[in-house]
Image (tube, rainbow, N blue to C red; front, side, top):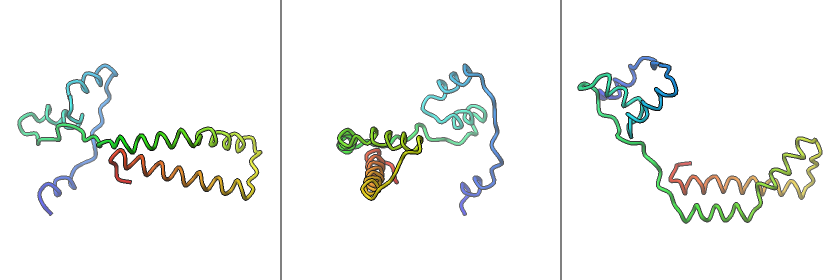
Length: 126
């Protein structure tokens, strides 16, 4: 085990501090692109502080996949259909026949496809 892993495993529980809303905003402004924890450590420990990542990583977007996803969502009217299902569930009037069972399974498949496509478009691992 190298020194960095050894240090991380021996860390004590986190320290908590309460701030006013104004103090939090000021702290975030001063931190800039650093994480709040990284900024606080760099201020508190000044010269002896380890260097932290300078900015948060943002995923690369795949515009073509996002456009395809939005087109698919608009064409499917899925939100309206799911709202109708929820309404009938809440009223206790949802009766599922074989056709509706197939429709519900198809909707679940579409939701799974949308989720995986969205994660792919955002550059996130599923």
